[in-house]
Image (cartoon, rainbow, N blue to C red; front, side):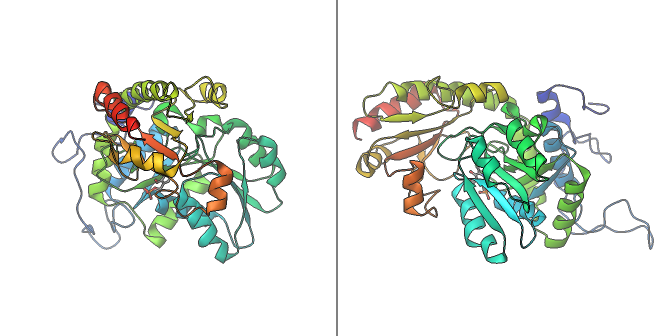
Length: 386
Ligand SMILES: Cc1ncc(COP(=O)(O)O)c(C=O)c1O
């Protein structure tokens, strides 16, 4: 398309933002600029590209695209979701403090508690669905309030707008990991958050063939800092992975619609099954975060956590699936199913897992885009073995 897609709809921006036809050839698809450096015309004169750790046109196209979809000022792409999160945390200096949702992705918990705490950063782990708990945890030196909503894997929903105002009253930033819903369903910056985090490995890329991460900043102060850390620490996303994520983003809207339709149907099926003790899915009216999520997001997504009551039942079920893939990760076209206690959240101490309700019978499914009848058939057969 011609011109800036800024005021156009979500799908139009997903397909066009940051992706003007290549100036040399008119290529519709942004090329993979597989280069480490750029020849300068003469000393002191170049085309805005000096060295590919700092600038790469394929990465820039992706960064501009995600920034447009999240409604942010800028995007910054990294080699993984964790590399994005570690860049975010360079905003926090030794002696400062972070308030964090008690239930976050296990790798985030591991990074904060086993690495950053060694560098004199302090963390308060709170039930962020309880806004008073966030308020009470704030300190003079709190720099960031960090939340996931819904959380991985317990599907707890936090009020983003109120969390942002609590953070701002105390001079802190609100960072939201938006990996589970994607900007198609939820845009935290519009609700007052300051930074959005994504593991692009998940729904944004959507095809389980790339690891990556993005930070989207609302303001220049954070945006400039993230660009400086990209250049200085160097944990950037490769041109090929940038291309893959850009390609995935073009179909984000229709993928998310189908993921959600399947997610709702699977949640409903599980909710009515005798062997399933509880289902955590914000799309179910019985979920405590249902109304809140309806008010702050346009959908409920495709992540469902459910409890089969024991490790033996979970193992019997998982070992007998045929269509669904027993694997870490989520957000791919294929249904990915996992056992958080022994897989994604094994780094969370057993007593904390117990306190959060992440017991040994708990299973998390990321519902994919296979035929719904095959997914329900697979669940029916495997639950018979649970
Ligand atoms: C919610 C969430 N945030 C961040 C990450 C980390 O992303 P990556 O695996 O791309 O480093 C994950 C990975 O599972 C995740 O589920």
